[in-house]
Image 1 (cartoon, rainbow, N blue to C red):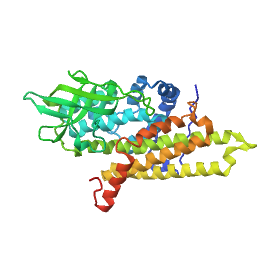
Image 2: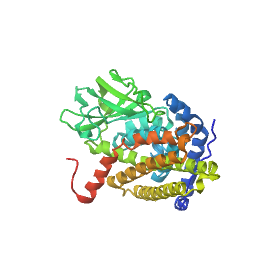
Image 3: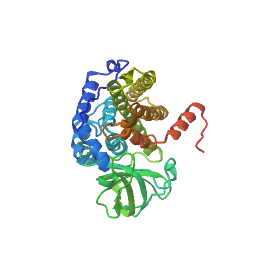
Image 4: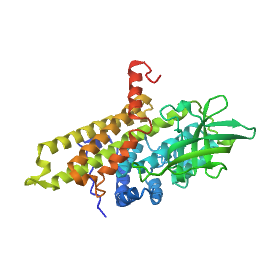
Amino acid sequence: MAQDLFQAPDYYNLDELLTEEHILIRDAARKWVKRDVSPIIEEACQKAEFPHQIIKGLAEVGAFGSYIPVEYGGAGLDQISYGLIMQELERGDSGVRSTASVQSSLVMYPIWKYGTEEQKHKYLPKLASGEFIGCFGLTEPNHGSNPSGMETKFKDMGDHYLLNGAKMWISNAPFADVAIVWAKDESGRIHGLIVERDMEGFSTPETHNKWSLRASATGELIFDNVKVPKESLLPEKSGLGAPLGCLDSARYGIAWGAIGAAMDCYDTALRYSKERTQFGKPIAGFQLQQKKLAEMITEITKAQLLTWRLGTLKNEDKATSAQISMAKRNNVDMALKIAREARQVLGAMGISGEYSIMRHMMNLESVITYEGTHDIHLLITGLDITGENAFK
């Protein structure tokens, strides 16, 4: 079993911008990843199995709803703390971070922001502790980048709602206890519903044969005349802006998480370049390898600065959706390019499960698509700076 020798790069002394609490929280997550994730993640990925044994540890390091108030079972931390936890989790594996991102930003967040007090007290403590795992149903077979076209619908049957439709590419679906499902009412208005695992007509078939996020459980959500109690409707916000608000929180976490994957690839490539000898000296001494490594640390540092500033804006409730989109797009693209370059530094060894790089690369091919594709985020920035809508 390979030892986790990761050393985090901090070329611009960015730790000086963090509080003591931030560093303690980050280091606790880093230590947990080294101890409980790194030793088992390659085997889980090879077997395409989610390692259920990590759920308790995720809860203990605050990965589930770290910013949710203490009264609802959360840790009451700030947004930079949340980001740092996501960074460390994705350094371990994008699938592990995905599980926590969905739980925090796509399940706990909408209940906290759009739910009733009864819903908050019923679900949030159990989600924070990992007793419940949740998933988020927005994407459909025919509607990905255009969620407003969703076909999942519910009818008011007097004493309950009747839900019909399907969602796909849903992280955590195969073992989720609750699902936040977005569906249209009879007037075409989008609402969020809390659907529980044991509701008759609700099924979650698993998606197999993935080459990416293999250690993350992905599935469908099928609703066949599911009777949903009226008290399961999230009443405080409706319309497309409701799920998009959740996606802002998730995209913010991804912007931090992608840095973790990039740092792991860079650190692996740097260490290997110092150990691998060709033509009588370490390959770190050759110009082309130094070019690769120098560009990697430059891009990581730029992403760290971008995301730290975004976290500061989030803490002040000033971050815009467009700013979050820019960070998500930039950082995932950055991480994917670094993974590809790092793989080249390792040569043939780069494809081996002995190293994490190829696993990160495959995972990032999903991350660059989900929570808004690379191109969609480009158009969000374009709309923001020009005022012209290129989506229609």
